[in-house]
Image (cartoon, rainbow over all chains, first blue to last red; front, side, top):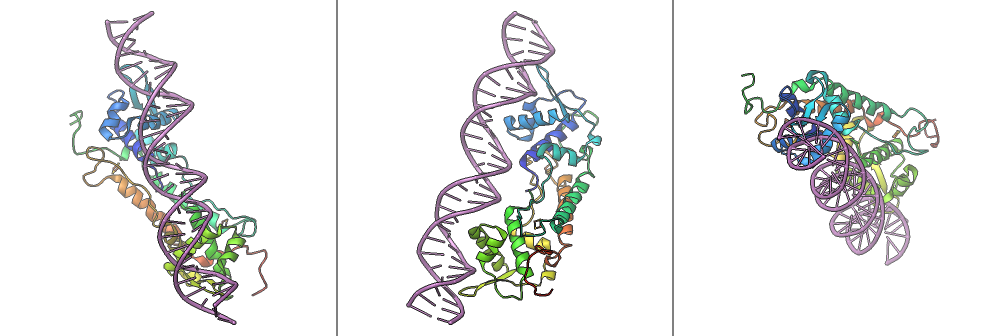
Length: 143
Length: 143
DNA sequence: ACTGAACAGGACCAATTAAGTCCGCTATCC
DNA sequence: GGATAGCGGACTTAATTGGTCCTGTTCAGT
Ligand code: FES
Ligand code: FES
């Protein structure tokens, strides 16, 4: 699996925050319950995203998390990289006498290409493209 | 890491076999030593490739492994799939009430696209494109 | 100031998967 | 029939991922 469960959780949490930004901070507990994500684990993920500036966290009563970026301004690639770190494609273990160690093994080129293609796809989507349960639930905020 | 160490080992072993096919079977021991791969582990990998028909194994004295396909006829994608299984990109854990579970979440589309792109790159190379130590060593077979 | 609601962060544990080993078995060549 | 080479299943170890816990710290409301 290229992307971890952590990414799944984080991404969905961001969708949730995206959907209800402008409604004030949302608590960890709410997100975790609604999205069926282990609370303590999600806490870590959001902390991480907070440090990267993707979300902002407010302490104290009536605190919680709010999205700190415009949904249309952050790409899927950025999100997944913040959560999982850069996508490592392949690491060669060749030592002297195997492969073209001294220089220009084709492998490096091939896997670089793979990495680029992945990046290109992911950079083509922003958080604004994604929504949770677009047809069900929700309070009638705009309807 | 998308591709495992197993893939690295297997791929390099295939390069090795590719370079010296037509020189008769090569023993596991030789490959393992030359390529600095744990012998017992490489054994498993080659067994697996033998079952898939990528290499052929000959038992007994003067046995060993030979490539069973034309290097130009097998793509990188095929090789890596035989070794690591299909590349899984993402698995969503959404349950009722998160995401568009009921149907058409964009995620599925995005990650399908990623998978396609990876496949496309890897399918563009064949084993014939790769060689070990092209400039060093080797007996003067064709030189 | 005090209380209680929230997040912060470090240490820790559990589950899964990847990597690697062992050993008795089978086929083959001479 | 013995030495040589691969087979295959069970096993162990190491690494990564997923997840918990507990002790802070911050802050709104009183
Ligand atoms: S096979 Fe690893 S660098 Fe070429
Ligand atoms: S976020 Fe998982 S299916 Fe949509």
